Image (cartoon, rainbow, N blue to C red; front, side, top):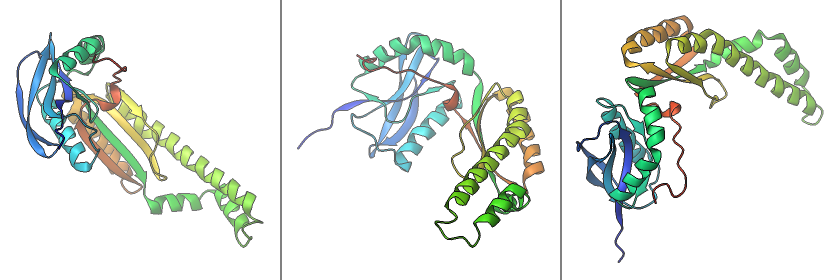
Length: 254
């Protein structure tokens, strides 16, 4: 019978060099105490857990994200990616020493700020109605009607290309009409690639906590204007996942 080696699982770094505890988290089948490992003027929030590959199951991911979100209520956090576990507390201290220059640059930039996400998906009925109003698409669609698979091959390629161009044009439109106005009210913004066919915007915004209510109200006004055409998914507050780029190198904790 083999015994799993216990290591140090990392949740996030905070700019507070104090010994603190944050309750317990259920990880690897057990409830585990969450505490800090201070390093100079900052600390890593961790728990003792087996050194293993952690499966990104819904339960495991939720445990990680909920813990970081809970800590974020009182602290500025630099979230560590899911599943990062080191052998010892000394390894964590070594890692923090290596990352200190990055942390010192990031903490002031994200202090008192939250991330919110906004995904916009075109309603099927509105997309279909807009397609019917597009002469080029209707002409290409008519050109493929009644043709055999072989005979209409190139027409179908043209139709597919035109459909992609149509969706790209919609994404550009909503970048100008929705993303840009919201970006002006945010501290930083990213318009990421769509993850579904009818998605016209997949954006993240870094918002000052003092301006969160005003930003929410702007999103609500945009929703009222476009609710008959778009489905809105507005999420957050989150740690600044999309606005932090921690560069970890092999051997940083050794």
